[in-house]
Length: 148
Image (cartoon, rainbow, N blue to C red; front, side, top):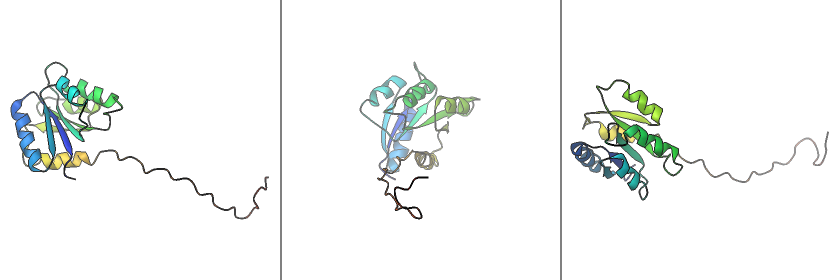
């Protein structure tokens, strides 16, 4: 499951640097954005497997960013995980209502971040297998063409 692409959106440079180091060490491709507008611009040419999104962003907050991602047919399949401040009551519920697939509490636990990211990547919706043409079974019992 290596080589997945992660987009980290956070206005704290230390969080961007820390997640970059931790996730690259585990084999992930990491991109960073300091605000929601920059993240949306990156999504024009990048389709990450997962996004880690800070909720308290300058300008457009992480909740609105998530709503836009989940409304857009081109990006709605991206797993979005909120980076929440553990002290802010109700953040998890707000994040889920906005469309986040889950949350990770800040400050980031360096020992468990990669494992949690892998767990959230398991949530990705896999497309259904192609529908094969139905093979018509021969009629058993009644002769073909018999109607009742």
